[in-house]
Image (cartoon, rainbow, N blue to C red; front, side, top):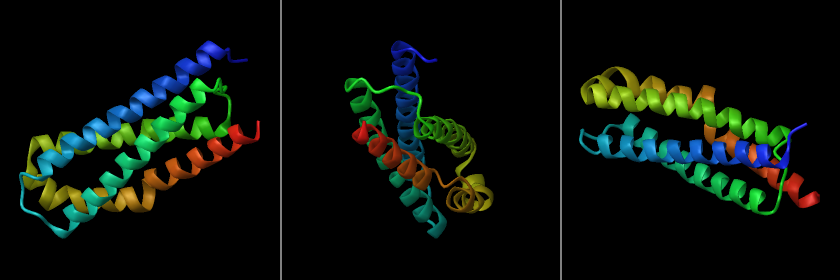
Length: 141
C-alpha cells in the first residue's frame, strides 16, 4: 500500500520527468532551426510541439492532483509514468543524434523517427488518454 507521501513523490517525479521532456524538445527545436527545413522536419517539429503542449497540460494536472491530495495508485497514473519514461528515452535519443550531426539527422534519421512517433510510440495520444482518465477518476471521488 502506497503512503500519501510516496504517492506525492512518485507523481512529482513524473511531473519533473515530463518537464525534462519539454526542455529537451526546446533544445531539439533550437537545433532544427539551424538546418534547412524539410517536410519531415516540419512534421517532426509539429509533433514535438504538440508533445510539449500535452506534457505541460499533464504536468498541470499532476500538480493539481497532488494539491488536492490525490493518491498515486491509479492505472492512469501508471500509464502517464510509463509514457513519460518512454518519451524521455526517445527524445534523448533524438537530441543525441541532432547534436551529433544535423545532416545525418536529416538524411537518415528524422523520417524514421517521425514514423515511430506517429505509428508506434503515440506519446501525445497516450498521454492525453491517460490524463483524461486520471482527471475523470479524481473528479468522481
